Amino acid sequence: MRIGITCYPTHGGSGVVASELALGLAERGHEIHIVSYAIPFRLSAYHENVFIHEVEVASYPLFKYPPYALSLATKLVDVVLEYELEVIHAHYAVPHAASAYLAKQIVGPHRLKTVTTLHGTDITLVGADISFYRVVQFAIENSDGVTAVSNYLRQRTIDEFHISREMRVIHNFIDTERYTPENKECRRQHFAPNGEKILMHASNFRPVKRVGDVVRIFDRVRHEIPSKLLLVGEGPERLFVQQLVKELKLVEDVVFLGELDNLEEILNCADLVVLPSEQESFGLTALEAHACSVPVIAAAVGGLPEVVVDGETGFLLPVGDIHEMSKKALSLLTDLELDRTFRKCARKRALEAFDSKRIIPQYETLYEDILGE
Ligand code: GMT
Image 1 (cartoon, rainbow, N blue to C red):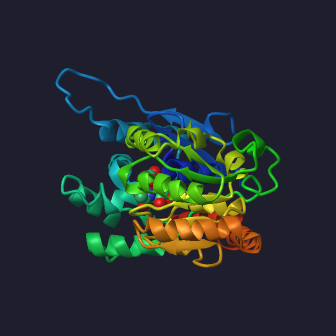
Image 2: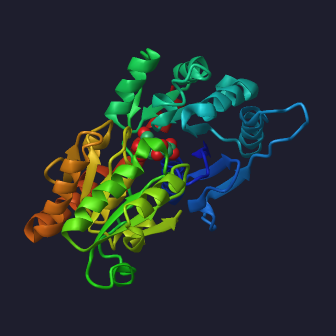
C-alpha cells in the first residue's frame, strides 16, 4: 500500500509511535510518506520505502498565528496526488485529523481514505478544550478509520465527545529486538560507579507527568539506599525540577540527560522506572522499560493498568502517593528475588502483549478494511 503518515516530529510519544509504525510498515514492503513540519527524530537516517515531506508555513504580517493546519492540508494534497497515496494516517487528532479530512475533500473522497489514531492529550486535554472541541469531534466522526492506543482512551473519547462510530483499540507496540535486556551498551558503571541503584524517568517534563513526584520519591529512596536518578527529556517543568533537586540537596545524585534518541541504552542501566503521571493514556515509557526487563512504579491512571501489571511487572498506586511509591520502589530495589521475578514478568509482558510483530499487522488489517469498503 502507499500510505501517508502525518505526526508531530518531536520527542513526544505520538511521534515515536508514528515513526516506529512507518518503519515497521516500510519493512513489510509498504511505501510510506511522512508529512510533518520537521523530520521526526527517529527517521533522520535513510530508510528504504520511507520518504519525508516537510511542511512549509508561509509567514505574513497579518498572521499572528500562522495557519499550520492549512499548510499541512495543502502538503497532504500535493503528496497524495504526486505519489498516488491510498491512505493518510493522522497521529494525534489536533490538527492532523482535520487537515487529513480537508485533504480528502480536496482530492475527492473516492480516491483517499483517512485514519486517525488518538494518542491521549489530543482527547483528554487539548482536544477537549472548547477552542478545538467541535473540529476534533467532527474529524473523529468523519475519519474512515479511528484507533485509540488503549481501552481507556477509547472509552474516554466516547464519554468526552459522544462518539458512537466504530473505534478500534490498537495498543502501542515495541520492537523487542531493539529494546532488549541483552543490549550491551549499558553505561551503568559510568552513572553508578559505586554500585548504586539506578532509578530513571523519561518524559516531556509537562505538569501532567509530575516529575516533582519522581524527585521526591527518589529523595526518600536515597535516604535508605545509595542510589542515582537519571532524568531523560526536556520540557516546561525542567527548571522547576532542577530547582527542587537543589532544594533537596540531590544535585550529586541526579543526572539530567536531556532528550535522547537511544532510550534503550539508558534503560539497560536502570533498576526501576518511575512514572507517576496525573494522566497517561498508555505510557509508552513503561512499555519501553518492560521490554528492557525494567519494572515500573506508576500511577494507577488512564491506560497504565493496561501496560503495567500491578504486583507482577511493577506497582500501580494512587496519583501523588509518593509515600507508597517510595516504599514499593524500596521493596523492589532491596529484595533481589522480587526484583528478578518482576524483571522476568516485565519482559514477558512486552513480548506477549505489545511486540510490534503482533500489533503492526492490526494497522494493516484496518487499512485493508477501509480500502475494501
Ligand atoms: O503527553 C505526552 O506524553 C505526549 C503525548 C503525545 O502524543 O506525544 O503522549 C501521549 O501519547 C503516547 C503515545 O501513544 C502515550 O504513550 C502517552 O501516554 C500519551 N500521553 C498522555 O496521555 C498524557
